[in-house]
Length: 286
Ligand code: HMG
Ligand code: MG
Image (cartoon, rainbow, N blue to C red; front, top):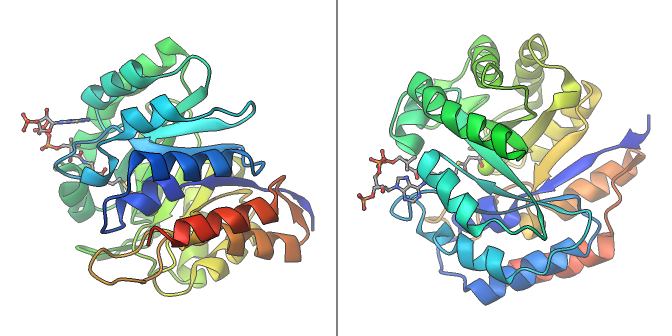
C-alpha cells in the first residue's frame, strides 16, 4: 500500500519542553531553520503557556521573531487560553504561515496536572480561543493527551477518548492529534482506541502522537497506518523524554518514522539527509 503521509515535527516544542537544560534562542532558531529546509510541511516551534508551568517555552516570542520562514512550511504554537492567544497575536508574523494548537486530555488526572482544571473546564476555556482563531483565519489543530494511559488515572477506556475527541470537535471541525503522552500504549490498545475514535472522526482528520518511552512507538504507528491514519507527530533526534531520566526516549524520532514509512512504501516529501543533520543538532541539545 502506498500514499502520502504527513509528518508534524514537534521536536522544537514537545521535545525541548522536556529537556532539562536551558536551550538558547539562537540554538532553537538554528534547529528550526534547518528543519524548515528539509521538506517538512509542519513544524511546531513553541508554546504561549505559563512560563511558571513550562519555563523552556518562555522565549517562544523571541524564537518566532528570529526564524527564517520557508515558503510552504506551516509553523505552529500551542495556545492554552485567551492569554496565550494574545501572546500569539503579538508574536505572529505576517511573512509566515502560522497555526495554533490547542490541547486537552482524555483523563481528569492529567487535565488537572497539565492545565489545572477539569476536562469540561478546559474545553469551555478553549471555546473563545477557537472563535478568535476562526475570526482571524488562523487554523486550529487539537491535541488529546493520554489516549491509552494516564500517569495519574491509569488505563483510559477507548470510549472515554472518543467522547473527549467529540467534545473538542464540538468547538469547531479541526484535525485532532491523539497523544500517547507517556508512551505506555501497546499496538493492541492503540488499535482499540483508534477504532473507537474513528466512530466520531474520520481517520483522514486524525494524527498519531506517540512518545517512545517503552519502545512501542513504531509498532503503534504501524497499527495506525493499518487503520488508515496518514499523519504522525515526531521529534527529530527523539528529543524529549523525562527530565529526571537523562537519555530516556522522548517523542518517536522523526528519522525512525521516515525509515518506517519508506520501508512501507509511503511518501513524505521529507529529505532524510537534512533530517539526519538536524538529528545530530538535536542530539547535542539532550
Ligand atoms: P493556572 O495557574 O491555573 O492559570 O494555569 P491562571 O489563569 O490562574 O494564571 C496563573 C498565572 O499564569 C498568572 O500569572 C497568569 O497571568 C499566567 P501571575 O498572575 O501568577 O503572574 N498565565 C499565563 N502566562 C503566559 N501565558 C499564558 C498564561 N496563562 C496564564 N497563556 C495554564 C493554567 C493553562 C496557564 C497552565 O496550566 C499552563 O500553562 N499549562 C500548560 C502546560 C503545558 O504547556 N504542558 C505541555 C504541553 S501539553 C503536551 O505536551 C502534550 C502533547 O504533546 C500531546 C501528548 O503528548 O499527549 C500536546
Ligand atoms: Mg507530546
